[in-house]
Image: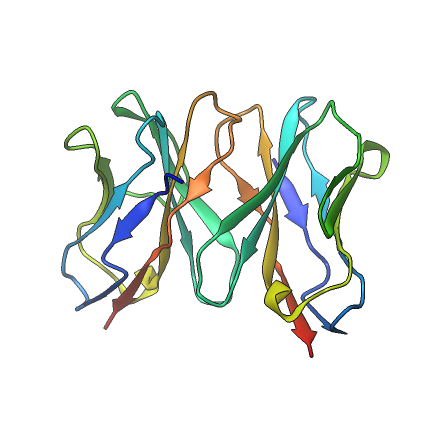
Length: 114
Length: 114
């Protein structure tokens, strides 16, 4: 069964460094998302992406964040200058079509900022 | 604004007991979708069910059942004859027509003891 994949599974970085989190959505899906989950807390929406542009973003998704679909298969989240509070699990999700379609999540990337 | 409330932070049961996880939501949208996701200790988010606001029929899938009551804005999840493998955090989520984001509840940590 097709699934969303994410790399790396765990990323450790120093405060102020740039990180890129990578996702490969399910191949026939058209809508892509990033969420984050700070340890022990609920899952929070960051951004949605469709037709090569951002559809919606939350207040968390400020100028230090950016997303890109550099080719036909990858979807990336870049954090330009990481802060301690960016430490969280980052989930990528994809949906086949239509805004209300089921979002299928990847296994997550645990980001630790030291 | 959308909100999902899962008032039960933690539930602990003994194997074979039935357990119900509560979910109450708030939205101004007349059309919306409700979801349940399971997050086992390994950390991934596993899709369980999606319901739209026009379909109030209860659903059963094996040991899982869902009770959607629009009048009380609730979408409760029951596991019958619980098993140790059911131990996980369960999230209820809402997707309204205004935007494409999932709004998650705080999650309920279910522990099933042998």
